[in-house]
Length: 228
Image (tube, rainbow, N blue to C red):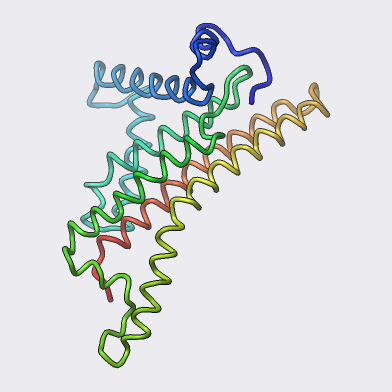
């Protein structure tokens, strides 16, 4: 969905048959790569400008990961930072007239949630080998408690399989709802509330990017920690 004609040259890409959410996901990726290359080419001991912003975001994500996972946190920094920056840029693009938020499409959010799901269990198996099964059978493990262990395993499997669905639908639903709400408010009061609308959209975009990364961090932390 967009409020104004999509601008050149993105309209040419869409006219060639590329879905809008794919085109704008490419735009978000290009922006992130451009900023990364610009910062890398002008690194300074005392950060300023774009380098300062990137360092603040990176340090924030690193602190979040290390708080949740301890010494395991640093190895997940590339994954978490990439998710946060990509989702945030996609969300912000949706605030620009003529642009769309790629995260307002379920295909984009599901493509973000599935790698998180597979990464969670990959790193869980890597950290605990076959002992990873202990995360699914509950705290009591004996022959007498076998029925309870089977029940806990089924419940845990359902919960884990639901994670990519909840991750993708939560982000998609919130971004779509934000888009519709801001569009309705803009039509009702186009000359009175535009600044408040943008402020609300910016806040929602930031919160949703943070929530997605926070849940990803908690899922990874649960996978690599020792089962109790």
